[in-house]
Image: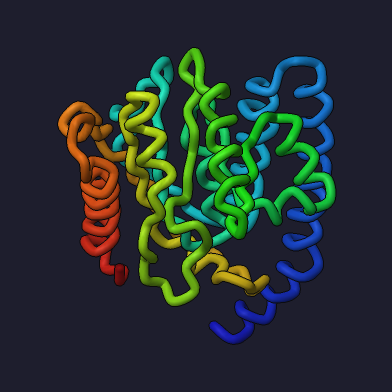
Length: 250
């Protein structure tokens, strides 16, 4: 019986789910581009981004559990730091984080059809990881995006984990937090690697949990010569411990 269900799901994935993801992504990207060009990038993210992420998860299907929503003040700006297991992390964050945010994304994503141009028009920040000076300039530009409760979202690992273990964090997010005197909001995403592993289209239904942790205030780190490292270490520990408690290696 299980084998028959697997075959049926494979047909569903090939005939419906993957085409739906492609078409809905292109449609949402074009819609978000138009709305952003009309001067409403926040509306584009709230409406099309949210529905896009939720629709894909519901049709996979993915059961999403959210914990810690009370730790997020939608009227406050944060540096949001999330672990990165899968492409589905993006669907989860768009669908359920429920706040305005700007992405810090790798430069390669700008070349994606429809999506790259939409991200540019929505004001997301692209980082050239092979050029330190360009990366610094891009992060400087991100400072101007933070206003009226709009946050900046980083994947501090820099890329999706291939092994399932959380990678070392990079400093950019935490340096920005100290420079702008913004709290860091750690977010743990658990289970998306089982839905869609890195570099694979082998999608499976399943369960995902997103934990929004209490914000880490930067005051204790401001005048510390090693403040960036300590803030980064604490943030990673918060995320890693929650993932470990759910039975996933870090």
